[in-house]
Structure formats: structure tokens, C-alpha cells
Length: 317
Picture (cartoon, rainbow, N blue to C red):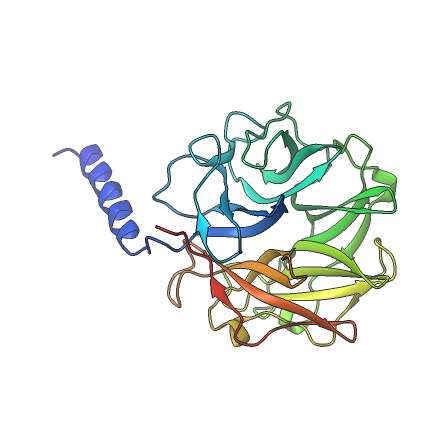
């Protein structure tokens, strides 16, 4: 048997063995987000399951945030599939929202940010194969609407992963460069536990409650077991942002798994807020990252998770 055949055999055996370690019902999405529409919840994220072929963004559905089905995207489980929208690699961190009667997906590919649209949350999401223009690499978009304006929170790769915000134009295809402002960079001890040269703050989610704006973010490299979630508050959507004194609010210490972070919020029909997130696969492996969900509450303008409310997100068979 020649070297090429031996290499192919080794790759096949490795993939097979890797797949054998995975649960049949656990969902493996990193950087997850849940979009609620017409009493159905739609779960998207960075594909992590090596048993599923293809590239793009899968989507799962649920009626109660507990029982999930899928993947249900119109393109073999994908809501956005490589080749039908901008990007050739690195399909990360999607966000889905409804705007002017259409469904939008803001996402990362090729370390750039793009916007795709569809008539359905199940896809197909498509665009003109172009990314939002920027002088630097940028990832992790989150679009937030406030007082008639659209703001794009995102991460710029410059001297670390830093969170910025800028107003968008009405078509949501470019930012207004003159409005660009830095929001968050990783400076505190919990945000950089390994004292790295390239500190990381990423995965922004923004919401408003009682005239106060909350920016939830993750810090440390995602491969770091100390990857964790914190937040900052502001009286305006563009800052200045004050980091909370009770950070981090989600970590290995209160979830019980390593590498907790980079998610999004969703509010159920009763008004309960949840934070969907990923964790490392195990104490020994980062990949494929697992998807979970935890209750997130607010008291005296502080965010905290409800004890013992964390659950893995799994599909029904």
C-alpha cells in the first residue's frame, strides 16, 4: 500500500473514531444564536459536528426551547450553504433578525462580515457574494436596532480581538465609518488569564432594559478553559461602557464545563431570558464544541444566571 493510500486510510479511521465519541442527540454548534419567530425557535451556530457534511449554517427548530429537531434548513439542513452566499471558509457566529419583512443573517466568513437575506428562517439565505467593506479583518457581527437606527457591534482584529460599534446604512450593507467607536477590549485579569500577546474580547450581544444598555461578551481565547462571559452597561448604544463588577457571570465555575461562552440571548413566551452558549467538548478536548442554554436574570441592573438552570441542547429522535 503506497503512502497516499495509507494517509487516506488514516484520515478515514481518525474521522470515524472521532465520530464514535460523539453523542447521537447532543447538538454541536459553537457561537450559537436562537431566533424566535411565530412561536418557533430557530437555533443556528458555527458547525462543529464532523459527522455532518458541508459548510455553512445549519438550523434546528423547537417549540419550547427543550425539544429540538433538525437540522431543518432547506439545503440539506443548511439555512445558508457555501456557494450560495459570500465566503469560502470560516463560516462563524451567525445572527438572524427580521427587518422590513425579510429575514436577515449577519455572519462571519473568511474573517469578514457579510449580510444575507431570505424569505424564511430556514433559508436559503443568499447575497451578492460580497462582504461589508473594512480596512481590517472583522468577525462576530450583532445588529441592534434602537430609535430608528441600526448599529453593528462586531470584533475587529487589531492588537487583539476588540469589540467595536458603528451605525449602518438603511440597506444594512455597509457601516458609516465616521460613527465607528471602540466598546470593549480585554484588560481585566479574568479576561486574559494566560497573559497573552493578543487578548480577546468577542461575541457581542446587546439589549436594552429600563433605559440601560447591556453588552454581553466573551473573553480569553476560545481554546482557553477559562473562556467566560461578562457584560458592560451604558446609557447610550455607543458607550462609554462600564464593565460589571460581578464579571464573569458565566464560566467553568458555575456551568461545570470548560470553555463556556460566545452565545446570544433569547426570551421565551413567559418573558424568561436565556443565554445560549457553547462549551468545550470535554475536560480533555476543545472540539467539537457542545451547545447549551442557561437562564439569565436581571436584578438591580446586574445580570446573573439562575443556579442549576443550565441544560444541554439536544435533538429529539
